[in-house]
Length: 353
Ligand code: KG4
Ligand code: ZN
Image 1 (spheres, helix red, strand yellow):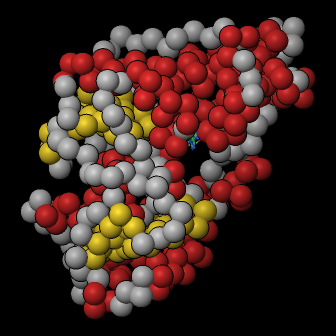
Image 2: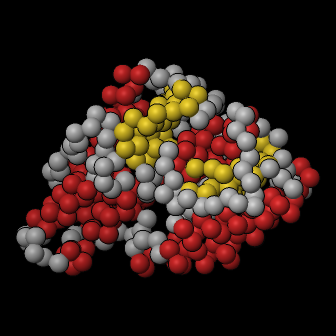
Image 3: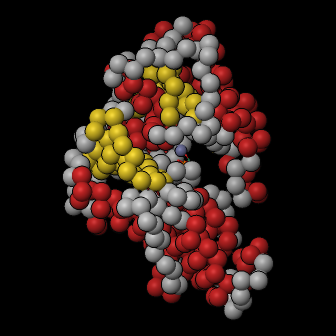
């Protein structure tokens, strides 16, 4: 059973083919990230235009790499939300058109939910991938951490889950991106803050531990503001100092120390709540999903503190991709969820889990 996945919710145009819900056959991602770098964040109009240019070549490449002809594609899966409206439209219209022309069932996929499904891919013919040895068992506790979302979800089975808590303000990936901007590191902030922090001393900068009233909720706006204040103090200025001038005043060592302290605190808050939920619900497996799951600091703290062995998927499957979309759709099919109408599927930019 082969599923073609299509993803275009943010700045990555992606297509992939997976087989039987566990085998990755192709994973093609064209990113417009370089075009957004000078703006320090994704510009929706630029992203949408890039999707239009890339969508057909990316889909063709995903099929060609696996020598898959249309006859052997059993279903098409597409992200219909959440995400940027203009970006989602391109993928959804491409998938609807192909489903009608090629007469294939079409599955609509929630992007955030799909991040978890990257962890169900356990084998591949592609070089350079390190995948988990087995699929997660239910009940499964999932920490979903991306540029737009931060939430803890308890899955009793496929598509049977409860969201235990989520961020009350910024997502953790967004906080990484904003901290990068404050200290003058390139976008996306996750990888650049993580790299800078590797050579910094976290004990040199005191940052508060993020607090929330909800047991499993998260909050990152206070920590981000604390980073801004700490950077001002480091160069001997007060809150009136223009923040866009900060990067020019900070030394490389100061940037590295701030990055090290921030990434430690940001990740500690994630692992605190994951451990709390693990102790309360005793799940059979724990997975981390989403772009921030690529963080080595997160993997280290999870492995150090959780009393269960957590398997991690390849970094290329943590950030946005279409393999996770196709995998989610495979499990929709095998769970008896009906395909959607290709003539009427709409985008839903604010879709929630
Ligand atoms: O899942 P994703 O690719 O897109 C969304 O659905 O949002 O996540 C992107 C986010 C960005 O905020 C990026 O800074 C963050 O993931 N990220 C990381 C790392 N790699 C990407 N954050 C921390 N450490 C990383 N190594
Ligand atoms: Zn994502």
